[in-house]
Length: 241
Ligand code: PGA
Image (tube, rainbow, N blue to C red; front, side, top):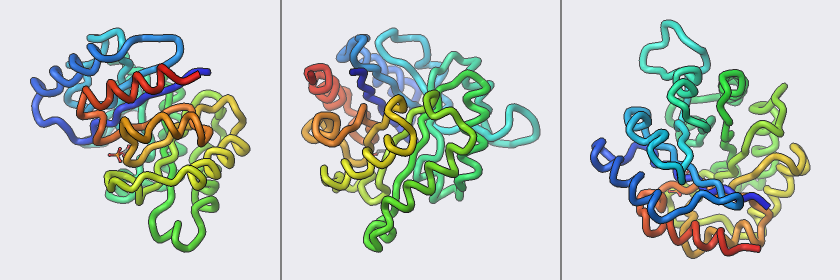
């Protein structure tokens, strides 16, 4: 069994010096093993500081342009990200969907282009609080998977289920609910697509999603900014059967 521990730094930290310290502290406390793949996703401006510096930790970008090059002010293309020798790219994180109006069709374009550029996309899906309350979680996530991964070989991507209401709120998803979604995603895509859980995952609850809810890994926001907490998550996952 292969597990994944991914840290999404979001728009943090605010200096290159802090980014270098965070990658160095993170790398010190994790190991490169066959069993657990550790990756961090720093802001674009620090990718260069971080990528290739620590063999223990793979690196990914938090977003990419839907085009390879051209007149797209403010965008960074997957070709450029791959050229930096990053391995992964997050696509369709709920903050991109909500704040920057990214649609499933945009997610699909980016996913296909990222693959063509040699990156491994981590496609994020998840329902909002409103959608969940209306009993539509499975329907929403199914729709995001179908549209976002249309004409994509699912074996080449990772999927992160991140219920929007659980992100940064301290209200992690209950195991039964999380299990229902991991089962549904695996039924839709096949067992070869790793599925990660994200949303207020921490050292206390993280490994339980892998042990009891059918997930292959975690996409961690806030807790990935604390190297000691992230290290504990790594130890917990390393210790799984
Ligand atoms: P969180 O964020 O762990 O801070 O809830 C997860 C994410 O948005 O990827």
